[in-house]
Image (cartoon, rainbow, N blue to C red):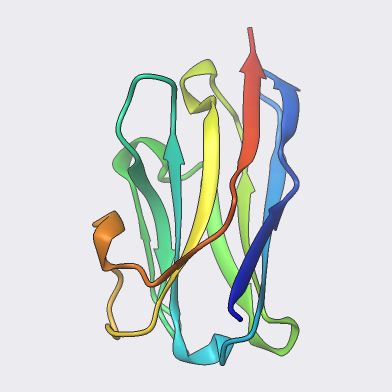
Length: 125
């Protein structure tokens, strides 16, 4: 069956960096647009970044532009989210998701077929 497994979360100080990874199995990874979402306690899940199939285009939440970078390595069936200059408001559980129906990137969680289990990112001030 399809699995998406996130890793790389943790506790980091303000201004620090983390790189999240999302390893996919059971799907033809290159045929899926990939998204990263996050959910903080008491808040709705929000789109953070997305990347289309090859040739890849990328999209970002305004508040992370210039700080976060999404990428993918289809040979490794893995998507990445490099997060720099982290702020306390970036604290959340981060999820990766795969969308096999659209060639573009959707910001709507309901448009994604598959989800990972999430990884906690905590930014301390």
